[in-house]
Image (tube, rainbow, N blue to C red):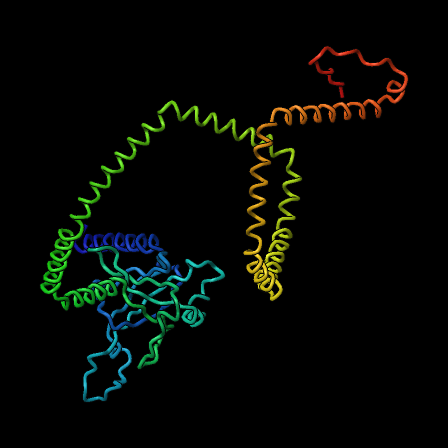
Length: 382
């Protein structure tokens, strides 16, 4: 085989292998058969860490990749500041190729065609870090539309546009910077001096006020212990138990006495206000009577007659003395007479009871037996 033939065969083999490998790679990735759409966003933040080919995710689900990262002046050359000035504030435009087949066969075209309604509902593009040391990727999420409003653009986007939201990492760094700036304005030396002064004041107050209180508290605790000891001695005294038993007995007796008369006591208590009112009325009438002119004249007459009654009173005193002497001398006979009268009264009461219970026996019965001198008749059962 000639050299030319060998060269042709080698070139054919190499070309065939390259074609086969390329076909395998293309067929394996499926890029040819995937439906894609281009959307874009812009941001004024730094895109350091974002690269061509960085993932694009919608609520955490990979849906595409970044295809273009450049300044807006490259795609939209209309300079709002004029042709003679460079726009240092030009935003960074990020274009993304989104595979719409991941949303299903019926939703494949609705994602990009209905993107404006999603923006109204709060759809935003946010640069998110894959980790503390990882790169950035574009995260599409539905946020609060009022919290993250849409910024008016200085150009008209060529592709369906998604407004951007602040990066979480940048927000955190901004918050840290704000806190650091606030802390840098704090005068820690003055704060330390004030704190030291406060501690000294508190220590002085403790020495002047709390220490004496602690001494008084110790004395109070000693008094409480002594009182407790005396109380224990009283409670352990055997006389206490007998006193409690007596108190219980007295309470039971009092209850027995008052219980049958509960209704009477209740009625008496109900009548008590009326009785008090009557007593007050009587006292008022008595006050009026004493203060009347008639009583005043009577008292004056009594005073004038008191002198005339003195001899009469002397005679009454003499008569009283004689009567007392007589009663003392005849006291035995008088007691005998009173005893006889009392016995007679009892006999009459018994006779009356017998007459009520059995009149026939009183009229036609046998006479009672004779009693020995000094004996008393037996009592009749009731």
